[in-house]
Amino acid sequence: MIKKRVLVFLLLMNLGLFAQEEIVQSIYFQTNKSDVETKYTNELLSFLQKTDSTRVESIEIFGYCDDVGKDDYNRKLSTERANKVKAEITKSGIKSKIIVTIEGKGRILIDDDIDENLPEIRSKNRRVDVVLNMKPEPEEEIKLPGVYTTFNKENIVGDRIMLSDMIFERGSSKLSIKSKNQLDKIARMLLKNKNINIEVQGHVCCTPPNHKEAIDKETKKRKLSHNRAEAVYKYLVIKKVPKTRMTFKGYGNTKPLGKSPELDRRVELVITKV
Image (cartoon, rainbow, N blue to C red; front, side, top):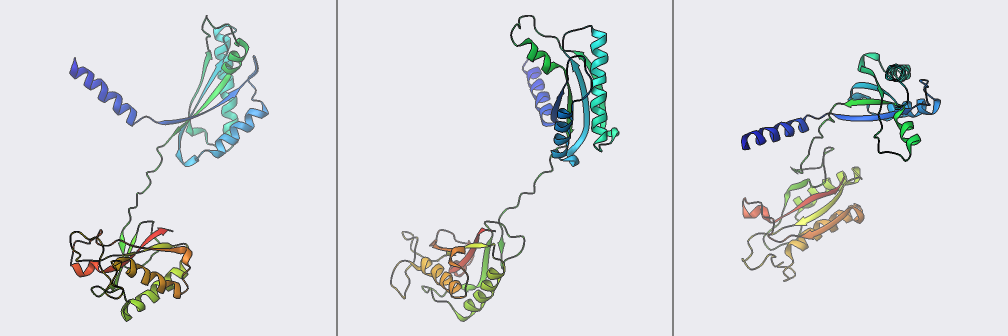
């Protein structure tokens, strides 16, 4: 018994995985009529125009009638309704070959215990359903933030720009000549790519276990990673990069690279907006 239940569950799961998306538009008719009213023609055309045609795999058209009248008459009328709707669809430019089903279903019976709103219920049953069977939406490529040596057109939020010449002397937050030359290039790129915002992140290495931050030998204060980030931020401001596009923050020793400790005496730029 358990095995059977497992098999049924797996079967249902598989059916769910492969279930096709359907979009339905209904067109309603007057009693004993099969002509499509202008109102519903316009609604149908608007519906088709708003649908992504590249995803439509097939179209099915099902006609229905209310519960009044004989079966043969209602079967014929529901088929006429379906064919009239098909004609409106093909007039809009959709090719007939994509319409795989045109079927009159006849009348829709109403439960015996329903006494209220019968006219409204019957009016909803005098209809044609246009069913669009849709192809699965293409899966969106998931891009994860990466590490780069410069900015590029493919950058996304979270990308880190690691600058080879932004390694500071131990205990120092002063920019070297090499650092300034590299920041000159970065400033030009930021001015050219006005959509990019950044956070300037400062880091340190080699602090005692009970301290996340290191001491700046110039100021004698335990704000070294903060000062390094601020030094880069201020230099970029001098180079005309708007303050509104930048923030800065010291991360102390909380984000080591796991390589040479020297590389943790760094400032990197993290993209916060593109």
